[in-house]
Length: 423
Image (cartoon, rainbow, N blue to C red; front, side):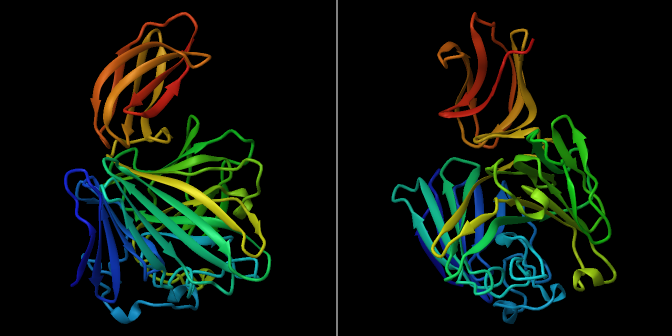
């Protein structure tokens, strides 16, 4: 085993280390709170995301051992063929959408020899002061789609989130039309707590809440809870799409809460009957699914998928999707995901009382701010210190002031959430 450190962690500093594994190389990025392991040779995917010693991502134990060594190094490398031949390593990766096999306007994978199983180049950049690290992964030029994919992963000291900037360049000499599609595989064991499963926000756009996309053995069942949707853990092989998704999706399981925030474009068309997000579920089957090219699931997996809109790309054009991923504890339902925190119980301000439960991505001094319609601060109430990735339970009295328009919850420089006075 070889180890080439880009920077050593000390306290809250960020470190990035290249390590040799059987059949491939990985890059470990650690800020003392979360650790990511990235595999450039395996389609540029994130294979591991760990917080407090708990693994959030699914990876295929038939192909990788606990140290991320390939059980058969000969399996590493580009491959193609029917879905039954797919070497599904697991983790988090980026594909083009829509998926299909009816013509050149659809991505006929996986498997896929360039974008899914091909080697990505990898650049590692760590700030001299250890405040941040960036990993840039770039695919080869894919002759079938005309695309070159790039994944930029950013990790900052003292935070329990990381950024994921996806882009697709038209590297061909023809115009193409594609959407970016990020796919995260998470473990899908039977539910142990009522909030386990997938949660999504809805936008109230008038688009359908759900659309049926793939029925392997059936369609995942979806429940509505107020303005959020819940996909409980269930034994089904199938996919459901969410055309009214508001730009966030979260998974709750034994490791904790994985939450992804992504932008939506309400004016643009989306693939898969307008789906902005999708959920695929699978569980072990005794026999292959003939109508899905012989796919035979062997593990319990949940896929949380975020899509960008269709973009017409002339040669040299680029489309991008900016995402943020947060890792937190297992609190049950997720009611919203903001730029700097996700909420288990929504923020409310009624009769001079502020309540709610959130998990901030960064730490610092917390406070409540009461603002008027012009944004001026009418009152400020300190709440003490809040920790990155630690639940912040709100139950505070904040007397209403004349002209009050909203209350904000802040942690350091981050605004965690805002709410208008009720009643």
